[in-house]
Length: 103
Image 1: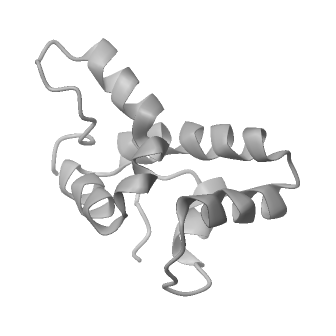
Image 2: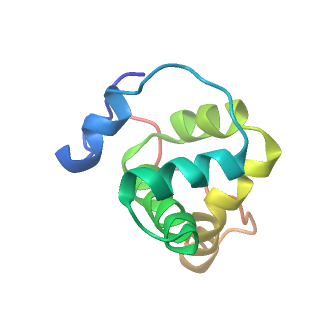
């Protein structure tokens, strides 16, 4: 995965230094976040959901759509905060966060 040019260095390295392209469930994802962040499972789930709006704010609309299209439906929970933020900030009728406008 290529780095997002505007992503803060703190998360940019996690986007570019992925272990490998692995497939696992949402629960396994949360377990991995729990392990790496050394937090409780509920804190890990919230933290993962909190990072998505940041990624959406620096990624283009096409990049966000590409990310979403590659994830199984069970990962839609990750986008709850981003979708709520987009709905609150948007005057359009769309409730799905699609990222910033394409460059």
